Length: 278
Image (cartoon, rainbow, N blue to C red; front, side):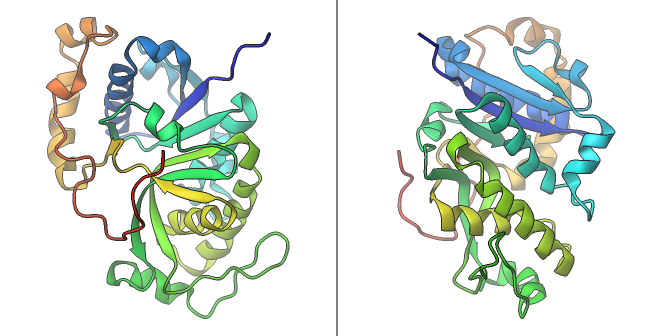
């Protein structure tokens, strides 16, 4: 009898900057909450520097310059790589995949987010805006009047009532991998018209809402935009402390003792779509 497919928690990190420390902290938060169940999960880091994660219990996938170029697409859009990473992981590992941004931190067991992923059901971090909202206006104005088509040639219905989700967390089941082809196609069409970095979030939101039932996970992961500068200032120093480096692979290590996040989602939900779905 074959063993069940493990759920895969993904991180994508490349280039220079504070992102390695952020990813390390996020991984530690997940490991702590997984506890003795951590062996039931696969943590995969797609990176151009695998050695940076050598002392963590993770699987690394080396990203070459050519792969990074391919994943960024014809217009060299960095955030397009997130969708390519999810697609690659679903092809390699199957089952359920969660991709988390490096600046997220788990405040509840990852299994709560994984439970919302199944055939025909996907998950993203939180519903943030309607396209008619002021915060989304620059992108909405850039896209207005343009026609965007799916791969079958049908027109996407995108307007003021379209809800845009934050992609700090993306969860998808292997049976829905074909949706990502439409996501990538829509990203490439939109990015021609507007170079707003969050166009990837809009394309993903549009396609997942059309092809699946899309849930939120703002109760599972914390994203601290208002606290980011302070968070980064302290994180590197804390993670290098020798006492921490000895303890951090222990099931008893609790990263929240170092930098405790406040609420699971800093700020009110901007779009009310009901509760998270288990």
